[in-house]
Image (tube, rainbow, N blue to C red):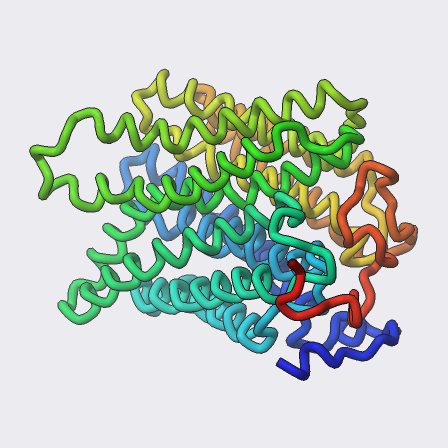
Amino acid sequence: MPAERQVRMNVATGGFLTRSGGVSGHKAVGTFYLVMAVLAGLVGGSLALPLRAGQAAGGAWMAIDHGALMVLFCALPALVGGFGSWFVPLLLGAPDMAFRRLNLACWAGIAASFGLVVAGVSTAGAMMLWCVAMLGLAINIVATALNMRGRGVGLGDMPLFVWAQVLTAMMMVIVLPVLAAALTRGLLAGAAVDVAARALRVFSGPEVGLLLLPAAGVICQLVETFSGVALCLRRPVLGAMVVLSVGGASVWVHDLFATGLAAQPAARPLVEQAVMALPMLVLLVAWGRTILAGRPVFRVPMLWAVAFMAMLVAAPLQALAVGGSDAHALVLPAALFAAFGGFYYWIGKMAGGAYPEGAGRFHVALAVGGSIAGLVPGGMMAGVAMQGLSMVVFVAVLGVALLGRRHVAGNYWGTGARTLEWTLPSPAPRDSFAGFMVGGAGA
């Protein structure tokens, strides 16, 4: 890829696309993913209230109306497409993604599938397009980590955020072809609607791992930075992520074939749940030890990290209380908490402007309070209202940060932020680490 290795050394000035290396630069494409995630979050959130009302009245609502919109087009595009495209190259010392035009094409495919779903044109066809685009994004992330690392950045030196992105991508390579095959069969058999609804239910198995893995990578960054020390138990954490990736790719086998495998061992579902729960327990222990070993500073990103950990603790308790039926409902808010934490952590690096601390804390309080209220009997409507108000606050915070009235320094978090993106000015300039990258020779 000579064009990728002969990047100019100058720091460009001008508009956003100029600073980002053009429309196909990894910073621009990452921003496109994040914008789409915000739009999908607003659309999905606006459907939450009528969804709850429909359930209360006994109405029938398809999962794609709310839950799937939030997972497929908000949480995953933000955590993997947005933060992955933006920061995997920066944390590796690479000038861009391995296949920059493929990165843009994958975003276009996901955006098109979002438009098809919102327009109600073809749910199964939209999901097929989504699978293909996300698969391309996953391949691009793995290729970037393997071939685009900067000089002296070995695989063992990669930050856990990058490892989480790579393991999520590898999990997608395992899971998405199976999902696409099921959708293709339904389309060819003329039963696309039924197959799409069934596929969404089955996908709730690996969906947990796909959400938690990149979220855990973001939380590792936040805990290290705001505790002021390197993450404790790094190797066990990396091992736990590997187990979560491989285990998460297999948990849907039981759901998919349960009707045809009536003679399977009754303990199998428990084993699959343990494969998901034990790695998260290792992560919680590591984060807790890191916080206790350092001097934590509870700025807004760290508050989101604490909220994420609280949701992970609450999920198994909720599963025990209601027989496991609502455990998945806590995974999506947890993933969104991690995405918000990443936004507040990196918004200065992306846009160059500071967010208002007070409004950010108010956003955390509303979102967490809304999630808690939604779990209390009779508090569902209040929870939805609080979460809707939290999105209004978030949009206001986003507008203030993008205006950039208060410019931030290159490393505005101080000595706790040690990864490579904090060696760059804010906002990160075009051609970051040009000349630093030695393709595939990161040893």
